[in-house]
Length: 138
Length: 138
Length: 138
Image (tube, rainbow over all chains, first blue to last red; front, side, top):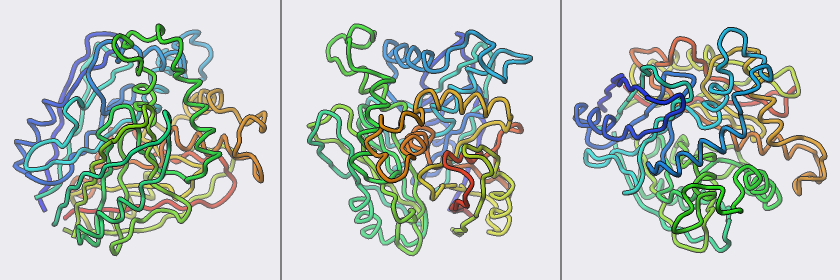
């Protein structure tokens, strides 16, 4: 069994931003020279999430609206955590969508449905964030 | 280390349907001849989810009601994604419950609590859907 | 490839309780003598969840409030599952936050961001619950 860990840096542009990181993950898989196994993608930022879905701007906006209704940013005072920074809602969103996904690697290729992507969601955007890509296999 | 990938087809009966796929996954684990490792189950359909829970009709109905309140289907116009097909709510639900779970395989058996099942949730049902079962181990 | 499975028992104090289990998981990883691989943590209780986040009392209270608004306990009659025990809301919360996470193991250490913990959330607390820790690697 072989194993490979690599940290990948991404930067979101918007306060709340969603984009695919499938290509970056594929590069790490290629680098690892592991042909068959599982790749784990974990976001090291606790105001972000990683999930699998299609990368459609309209749909990602709909997801964001739904999530924002569930955990609205304002009024800041509704959250006990909002003392120094007003980022409680970003943390809560991160918990609800989750921080990590696992994807099968088959003959060196990520085994995702053709429309699917690994999506990074940043709920406290405009800064660099680190994603850990870990592959185990043969 | 050994590895094994297999696609399993399921078909839901209702527009929104929830049922256990534990037995199908167990069959693939047996076929793989892998005794100890991890099995990853990923739904290739982006209007469905996979999660671990008990398979109780009343509870699955309660989960569905809660989720439906959170991301209601109608009015269709509330979602930017609803242009050709009105399935935005099904996609959003899929993101919230997630597309994949990992389960331990111990001496050839799925290591789940005795009441637990791997549940497939279809939010755009009545069609065939594909689940990828990937096992790595020894 | 090596593999190691161990059940860890935890006990929550409050009816709804959230606390880190990172140390218990780290002990199992050390015991396994596996240096590089993936550890899967799965809660055997279907009224609980496992997720990755910071262990901040205020934030965990905010998460709980949000989740409780989404799936309130009362009125009990709103849930079809509430026949014998009134724990439908606890089950629904468990599904929404999920039952399991995977974490990279690198040189014997859990590869988490320095602020992150593996958090166990009990929605039907005051009892002992079992967590399965499974490690595969070399």
